[in-house]
Structure formats: structure tokens, C-alpha cells
Image (cartoon, rainbow over all chains, first blue to last red; front, side, top):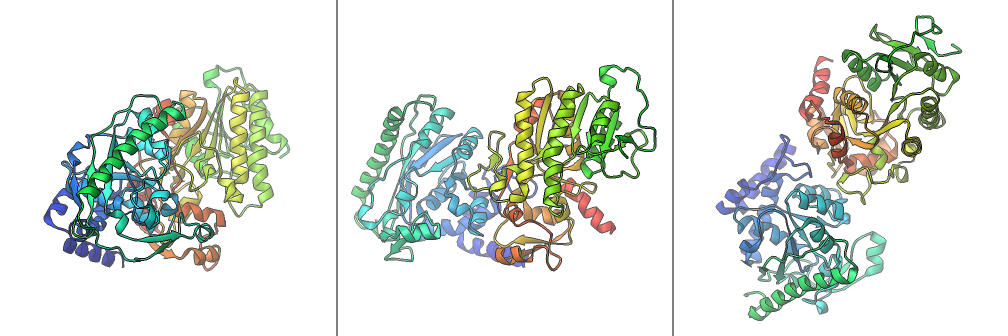
Amino acid sequence: MIRLFDNLTEKAAWLLSDDVWQEKTKHLQVSATPVGVDRWGMSPVVFRRFLSLGDWLYRNYFRVETTGVQKVPPGRALLIGNHSGQIAWDGLMVLVAMVREADPPRAVRSMAEKFLIHQPWLGTLTVRLGQITGLPENCKRLLEDEHLVMVFPEGARGVAKPWFQRYQLQQFGTGFMRLALETKTPIVPFAFVGGEEIMINLGNISPLAKLLGFPSFPILLTPLPLPAKCQLRFGEPLYFEGTGDEPDEEVEEMVYQVRAAIDSMIQNGLACRKSVFWG
Amino acid sequence: MATGRKSSQDGRRKRPAVSRERQPVLVTGAAGGHGQVAVRLLLSRGIPVVAMDVRPWYGRPPAVDFYRASLLKRNGEEVFRQARPRAVLHLGTTRRPDIDPELRHRINLDGARHVFEHCLKHGVSQLVFVSRSSVYGALPEHPTFITEETPPSAGRTFPEMQDVVAADLYATGMLWRHPSLVTAVLRVGNVVGITVSDTLSRYLRRDMVPTVLGFDPMMQILHEEDAARAYLAALESKIRGVFNVAGPPPVPLSAMIEQAGASRLPVPETLFRWLLGRFGFPQMPQGSVDFLKFSNLVDDNMFRQGTGFAPEMDVSATLGVLRDARLLQ
């Protein structure tokens, strides 16, 4: 049964992916043990197979235009961006872009919601794709191991925004900045434009979300993702000096600089866009 | 026997004065799986050993001084009086769910209290207190690699672990209150082997291993001989503090089952919980199901740095022992 599932997913991955994807995923630097996963539980095989669907969406459905990927420095770095799309389509596209467009290809680790990690199948898949429970201790350890970590400081506030708040950056947490200061990690801001139009949210039913233990419960006008044309723009890395133990005011000022950089890239992306679906 | 009885010998012989280094190491719970492996290793390194257990130990090495005594009774203290150990390796704890909860509580918590009292009273200079990394619990708010600073919280979802957690916290408290006794509390991960019968070891010995459908947690295992080497490393390096002890890098549970030569039977969680203890399913408390769903990995860097310990057996070799044992059967 497991072998049949393996064969089917391998065949599907082969059909969905192109030569670039197959070649790039071979060169992913993951220190997997003999059983095929690294110590965090990431499996390069599952990553290659499952994200071949993401790669197909990246090329054919969302037709993502990525710019500035060469600005991501080697070694440890924090990718900080805006969050949108109800489901983390933006995160998925960044994962694909850093394999497809970066040289050498890099496996991005992201800080996933605890809720996600603890769901059957979904949680296991998330871990096999290299995503980690969103906790400062995990993030710090990943950075110290020279990983590229993606954080959406808006969290669930950003991803589950209703339609009328599209492209309005929500409040940023300060945890990522304190970790960047403590671990001397450069911050690479990025903007994902098009994500707000993938799934249109009319509003959230908070009591229902609370009752079910979900981060949010959106009323979706479009339950299936729309083929919005997306842009992924990476900015210049930002280097901040400090220990991570500064007062909130100082850290918030630094966070504001990152937020402003992301906002500026979003506005540029929107200004360049003539059509939601055709770019 | 009323007093600490040295098995098959007169237990009240008078011992001559010996140098501190030649004073023995007392191993409590020595007749258990962990104890047997640890005693054999200590003896093989030329360390004099006094073993103690309330259970009989048939087929023990002739070089070991074995006392049938209980830490919960007066004869337990008599062993300390007679043997005058320089160090104690405390393995006399249990997590077995089939033991009466009151007795388990007494073994774990009162046993811990008595071992500290006897050590302090009878001039023992070092204590290695073996606890379990499962005291942290498999909880969503824990980081992927749990450090020693994380509070042991297993009792929240796993009431049967409360006595183990309490004993661990008691030992940690005593560690700082009595600096004259060099104490190391070792929170040891899942130990696997043919001699030990820890929960995971028993679970992986099955031909058909039931798992919770949709979950495949990362797990750490430690070969029983590596566990014994870790106890020895703690004794030799005289470390003080609380330390996580783990084996080779973690692997998914599914890979472990495969390497142990068993088959996997994924069962939906509700059914799995209902089937526990029925129709040949393992006799496990409900709280332990979380450990089959979520990771409970520990960061053992502090122990490795403090002692230079490194496991000698990788996952494949560790589980190969179970696979070979299954083939022989």
C-alpha cells in the first residue's frame, strides 16, 4: 500500500515537474540521515515530490514573477514578508522560488502555526517539507545552524485578512527582530503581490474559529484558488545591530523599517500591475 | 529478610577500610533491564559494584555483591551502612502502567527521598539519578528540541506520569539544596534493547505495531548499552546538574518500525484509544498516545559537552537487535 502510494506520488511529481525542478531539487543541501530525513524531520524526497505541485502552480497557475532572489545572502538569513491568501500560498511560492530561482537552491524553513503541525497528515507533511512549529527556540536553533528561515510577522492576522483589508499590512510582532539581533542574522524583506486575490475572504467568524480551535474561520467567496498573477519581490538585506534585549520602543523602530521596506515593495508591485489575472 | 541481605552470603560481615576510589558504586534497581546492563558495564571497567533490588536477580555476574533490599524498607539503609558506597546510580524507579498507582508512587517518590537521605547520611559523595525525558511530555508548546530549562509538564496530559515528574523535580531540588552530594539528574530518552523492557522497547518488539493514523512523530532512541555508557560517563566526569541524554539523531516512528523488522498498523486515533489493552493492543495509558502523535525530542548538547559522551550505536544497529531477536524467535 505504502509502495503503491510512493509510486503514484513519484509518477505524479514526474508529470507535474520540469527538468529544472528535478535538477535543482537534487542539489538541495539537506543533511539527511540514512533513513532519509534530517533531524528536524524534513525529507528531501517528500519535498521534491510534493512541491512539484507547488512548482507547477508557480509556473502555470500563479505565473509567479520573482525578482531580487540573488539578494538573499548565503548562510543564515530571515525572510520577512507580507502574509495573505487565507492558505499560505505565498509561503509555498517562496519555498518553490528559493529552489527554482536561487543558485544554489535553498530549502526554506518556515515557522508554521502550532495548529497546523498538530493535525493528522497535514502536520506530518508540514514537518517533512521542512517547516517547524513557530516557536522562538526553534527559530533560534535553525538560524544558529545557518538555515534560511521565513517568518510572516503578521501571523494569522495577515493570512486571514478580509477582502477590504487587502494589501494593508497588519501589526508586526517583534519576536523576529529580537532573534535577528541576538543571532546577528540579516533580514531580507520580501513582498508577495497577487496573494490577496487568490481567495477572497468576506469576513471571519471568530466564535466559530474559537469553538473549533482554528486560527480563523473565513467566509470565502472563492473556495478554490483563483489564478491571480503573482509577483515575488525580494529587497536588499537589512542588517541591524543589537543584542535582542533592547526595550520594546527601540525594537519596534527597527521592525518599522522592515515593515516600511515591505510596504514600499508591495506598492511598487501594485503600481506595476495592470490586471489582477494577466499581470 | 529483615535487614539488607547480601544474597547467598552473610550480610553483616565487617568490611576493612578501603581507599575512596576502591569504594563501590551502588546500583539500585539492579535486577531490572537498565540495572543489569549498567552493572555489567561497570564491572567490565573494573569498578567495584554493589547491586541492590527488591527483585531477585538470577544469573547475575559472580563479581557483583547483590543485596535483596528495598529503599522503602529499613533493609535499604542497611545496604548503605554495610557497603559504604562512594557513588550511587539510582535506577530503582518504574513507569510500568500495570503496577498499582500507590505502589508506583512510593517506588518513585519515596524511593527518591530515601536514596537522597541515605546518601547524605552515609557519606556518599556522588549520586546519578536516572529520570526520563518523557517527563517533559509531548506538548504542542514545546520546542522541537527540548532543553533542560523546559519545565517537566507530562503530568498535564498524562496523569500516570505525575509520580515520575514529582520524583524528577524532587531530585532537581535536592541537587541544589545539598551541594556536598554531587548529583546528576539524567533525563534519559527511550532506551531500546533486549534486556530493558521500557515502553518503547516493548512496543517495538511487537510483530504488528499499531500507530495513530496520520501521525509519524520523530523519535530518539538510545541503545541499552549506550544508556549504560551514559551513566558511566556521568559517574566518571562527576557532573552536577540536570542533563538530557539522547542517542543518535532522531528518525520517524515509521522508519523505526521498519528497521525493527515489524509491520505498521495505522489506526484512527479514537479507535486506537479504545483498543488500548483490548484485542492484543498494547496496555498503555491514554496519556501515552500523545507520544505516538507528537515528537518529544530533547537537546542533549549539555550532557555531551559535560561528559564527552557520544552514542556508539546508530538507530539501525539499535533496532537491528530487536529485528534479530524477532528472527531468532
